[in-house]
Length: 251
Image (cartoon, rainbow, N blue to C red; front, side):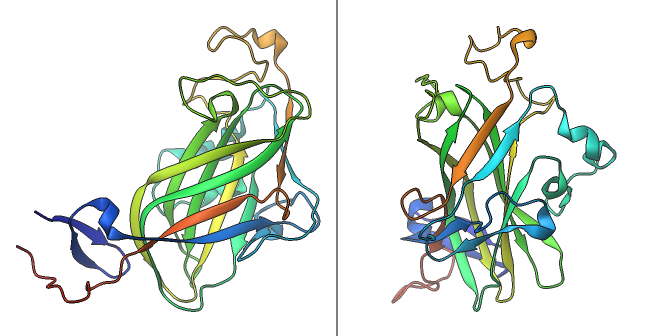
């Protein structure tokens, strides 16, 4: 009556009545911060903090349908794996790093990312990736997701953005379990989705799949990260292991 799941980092199998029970129901929220606004590259990144800043200018992501950022790292695509870091260096990407964790933290469940945004186009696509950066500089991908603004509230509900409208774009990553060791950091990378692997979005708000490339619009997406408009990454904390008053042996 129990299921097994593996906890990487702890290198052990664990058991729970359900995937939901593997999580404690608590979460660690890390808030995006960039006091100077848009960051230039992975070496001049924003931060992931325990609380939202009082006041900051937004980070601006430029989505230009005329561009194909993957050309910049095409030689690496064939060998891309869970430890590949090159996407954080792609053109137009913005990056946020947490401080090194002071103690081990165990995750179990789906990570979630909430972005508070405003754009000068009715639609756009964004891609987000979360990586664990170990003290030696190596990395492991924890999750990746994409979102189209018009479907931000569900795949069967189209809502184009209006000029000046602020909206929440929620990301939900696949269920995962990891022990993040002390000294490791998290890296959040957000970028416009302009890839031959996905349906093209010309940011016009037109009928999906029937937009005219000649009408393509460059979207400037402001991602807010202040106390009034907090954008944040939520990490699901694992339930205690071994469970109190329970055997950890397999049935």
